[in-house]
Length: 153
Image 1 (cartoon, one colour):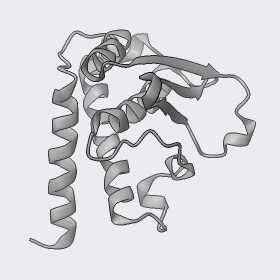
Image 2 (cartoon, helix red, strand yellow; image 1 turned 30 degrees about the horizontal axis):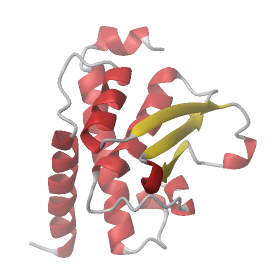
Image 3 (cartoon, rainbow, N blue to C red; image 1 turned 120 degrees about the vertical axis):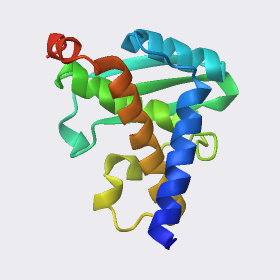
């Protein structure tokens, strides 16, 4: 097994553990997913559709988490299609659920794909991949049926 294989194995394991942590099940809506994450982590979350995102560049969303207050907000672009903004928010939920990573700090690196940001350290790269893994799992949960996905467009 080479280093890339080892990284992918760790990412899958962490992503699967993060997904299980919230006890997410088929049939949930996005609001149900957010509520399940709140319950699992004993925090309060708000999803904030931001209207003024011209300065965001490639960033599709970000997390602001305040551990001392047990609350956070996930900011997404209001101009994005619902399915797209939910995916961006799900990525941030992945960071919260990945207890191997989440420190509650806001980092600029969250604005870039892990594949397009060569300056990421291995732990940062893995954390971004874990969050993507969780976001894809949530998307499959929410949009497993093509009719469900189409209704959000």
